[in-house]
Image (tube, rainbow, N blue to C red):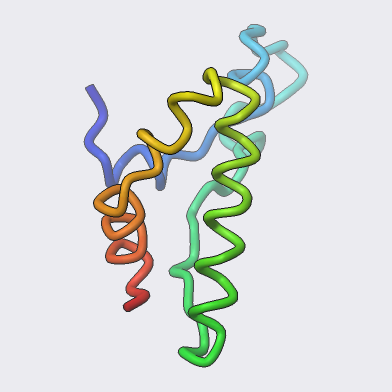
Amino acid sequence: MVGDKEFYRKKITQTEYRGSRYSSRHEKETQFLNTELQPVSLDPKYYNVFQEHILKQLTRFLSKVVPEAYVSTILTESLLKKMYKLLRIK
């Protein structure tokens, strides 16, 4: 299995994404998409607004994929704290 860091840096071609095979007219090496992600940086004065936005978007998404009774259970403080820690937001 591919390691976490390797997964984010792997370049994926549209052909691979679609599950097709390469035709002889395309060179495989020139068909890759760059999937390298840049780190997120946010000015500390926007932390509160961003946290509210994350909560709103997560609630909206979860309400569509799980029963509403479970949304508040899923959105525990520990989940959001872990997310904010990964985003380096205090």
